[in-house]
Image (cartoon, rainbow, N blue to C red):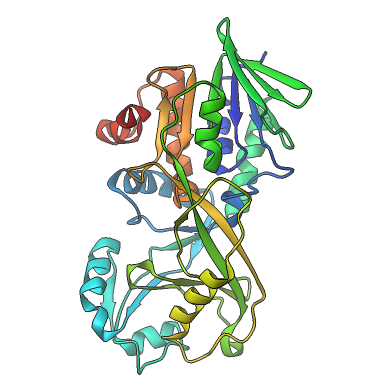
Length: 356
């Protein structure tokens, strides 16, 4: 007997399934042939506790201990840079991100390809850390299976019906039944809601593109921080001996298997090249992911106020991995009728009731 069906095998769905599997029989249905195929598999893999709305920051902080204690974090650091005419935007970002101003010489010591003739302002802090996203994802999946739950891939949902106190989810010729349904479908969250006869919450996917380039100038980039332009108009991050450069685009799109637009990548690479001494001469690869946001740009966690048998676990935006430990614990508490351990004001800011 399945107690809970979770639709979506990304970090959101797998983390909440793992929490619930300790007391309930859980089934995870993932449409693609592998787990974390869409947004989770295309993450920047970073935790920055000062990133996001206040409710997101609360989840970041509540997740940090779990991620650190279980060995999912490694040093990275964050460097913010600006040109002289960007001082106002720079000071705003410094305040938001909690970084400390450093000299241009100190910035060059961290990222030696920065152009000292163009970079006028810099700020840094050490508390931005890499997350071992694949291990975190797979560990949550293993927890579900060890607890007797199931994680099934290649299960594309075709219809959802509710009758006689249970959901019937149809995937091809297979039908699955459970009294509780959790919508962790990422970019397809509103689509799943509509299939289930639940009013959507206007969760919109936004494309984020990335280019992978060889290490600039043959440098060993492994210990470089992630470095940003002000206003997050681009960023660059080391990745297994290469450098990821993103235009930090955020274009609203329909849910789909995203790809990077050539023009968007070119614009982002041009912004990056403006402040470095090494031009981009080769593109190793490129891709895009979908970061899905509710209208107020914070997560949606909890039972639907009209159809409480339908549970939202959506709107993670770019915060899925860094909030997953706390977000999944909170949602499991709400589903199981327990009092959440997180501040009540944060819970209210995350529940779907706010969007009705």
